[in-house]
Length: 337
Ligand SMILES: Cc1cc2nc3c(=O)[nH]c(=O)nc-3n(C[C@H](O)[C@H](O)[C@H](O)COP(=O)(O)OP(=O)(O)OC[C@H]3O[C@@H](n4cnc5c(N)ncnc54)[C@H](O)[C@@H]3O)c2cc1C
Image (cartoon, rainbow, N blue to C red; front, top):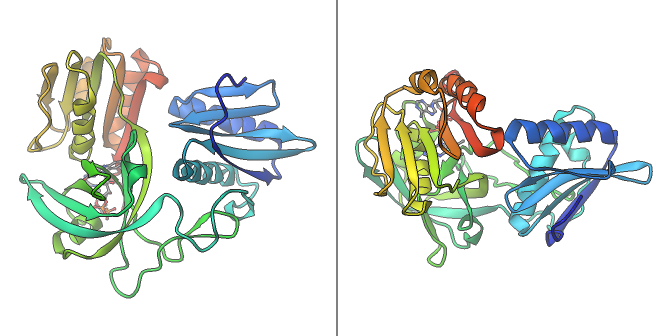
């Protein structure tokens, strides 16, 4: 049942799928990702994500999928998420979802804007820091810390994503768009910075090391989780997560106690000073930490690392702490081609 005001921005799409199937899908999502689940007298079910929600409700003999949010760009992100989950059920295609909503066909999706590389500088031995001039990025300056870099085509003109007539983002070309963390942002000046871990074969690393000031690229988001706040935190990650760890540490109250594990080969990344920070550097030490976790005193756990190395830690953490107090994310996959 709803006890809070309806978010301001709303969109919905009729769907030819039984309500019970969508209800189960939403319950699975809530279980898998630790999301708050709501039910309206068996006629509607929805999950909360960030400053919004998506779900399904019975309407007459039919079923409606809906998304609601407190901003247009987050509404769009939730519509995209709902569309992907509904399409994954295999009963309808994403294109069959005819969303209502405030967007215009042919325009950029509300969670996308074009930016230009301002500069790229080495950061320690393992990272490149890239500043992107991106105009209106207020949507990225709120509580979410991640976004996607959308790379231009390496050769030939780039066709950036556009909204279809049913309000979905269409990518005419399959553009590479991995997730990154906003390391620093100045919404008024219109720039953001991201720290790129340099690894073999990385298309973003390659782009960043060769690009020139003024090169156009896409900025998509926000996405992913926000920053956990707690009196006592257990956090950790490999190099790809160091920028996010820095944002998490910087956001904690001075009296917080933060137990931070760095699993990267290198620890050459400047984390913010914090009086309650205890750092442990144990390269590829995820399984070792998992083996020693007999209890978790922390109120919240946040860990992001390579997919295979995350697994033992995930099992160990979830033995001691409920899903809704943990964020355990695979940031890359060593077995991906
Ligand atoms: C929410 C989120 C936030 C992230 N934030 C950051 C961030 O701030 N900074 C950052 O550097 N990364 C970050 N990552 C990880 C980043 O998205 C991946 O490493 C991504 O694969 C990089 O894309 P690429 O184009 O460089 O590599 P790709 O061209 O996609 O991959 C090429 C090859 O590199 C391998 N590979 C990918 N990552 C690594 C790695 N770390 N070490 C060794 N091999 C690798 C792949 O398995 C693949 O074989 C984040 C990921 C997520 C999900």
